[in-house]
Length: 231
Image 1: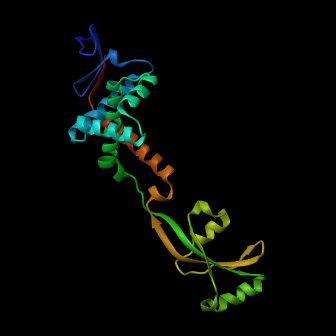
Image 2: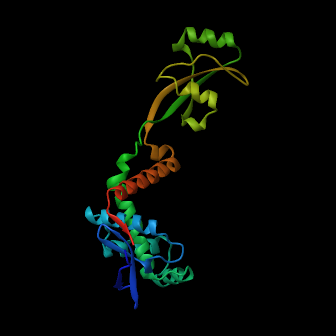
Image 3: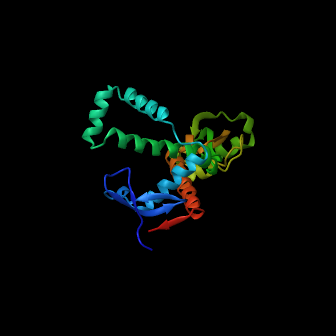
């Protein structure tokens, strides 16, 4: 099929359509630098999805976001524009990039976030009692109500040594472990409370990665159901 040429509002010369995404053209002039056609296709799909659900940010929202960035960085509008110029960015280009970031944020909040299972991450409020010998620790277990525990605080699984973590996170609330050998003798541990926390609070890095992976799967679904024609 021969290439289709159109008058591009982005350039003073005739432009060429390199792909059509759900009847929306992608132009050759968009392929600048290291930009790949597949990336532009996915970008167009995301924009269309945001528009479909009314999640495309307004000019007012974009301007307000820029004002917040300027304020957060304690800059004047002039200083901000100068900072953009040093990075080789025009305000128009920066706004376009910001718009895409806000679109992604809005889609994640409304369409993607609920795909990530953020519960089921436990922490334990741990207590410990120390003994010099194994016999003392075993004798203490015969009268559990008499054991004097010291609170150690709240722990996630990564906070404890692997062998101790395995024991602590296998215990039910108020359950006391069997004697555990330590450097100074033996200890008994008890889980005062099991705390279920959202993943985003327990492990923010992992949560952000799961959100990003979920967004990529979402975009793949959009692509699978879209009409895409390469020229």
